[in-house]
Image 1 (cartoon, rainbow, N blue to C red):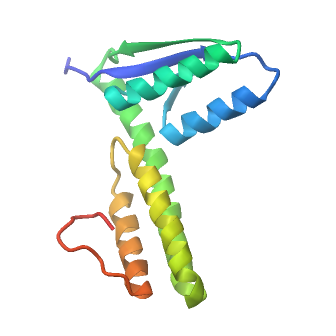
Image 2: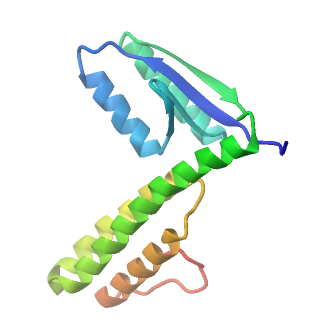
Length: 165
């Protein structure tokens, strides 16, 4: 069996009412790009940033009257880890495809709107990048689309930075 990497897990339970803390938690988990392992159990590849983020969320769950804990674990097999990574990559691929489509729409839309749309899409690019632990091929297409939009707006595109827009 091939060695697997460490993952940080958040196990949580929140009361159904009030629904506000549940909604807030769901949004924050989505923003982090977690893998949903089971109802109330999510995972991220372990590093200092992901550990801290899930520990903060555990504290928020406790403050909202729920129960929560963070764990460090390793998938039992390399195949399980590949499945987790593939799921995270597929979710990011979908986000990158949507970003590419928005860039294309902006290029086809009113020229006056392009600078505002470019700023918004660059923010979205950065947000996706923060949760992109296993970059899919769609990342390069989204970067190229952002560069094309920046060029259309007349902004300089940094040279020699690989697939970064």
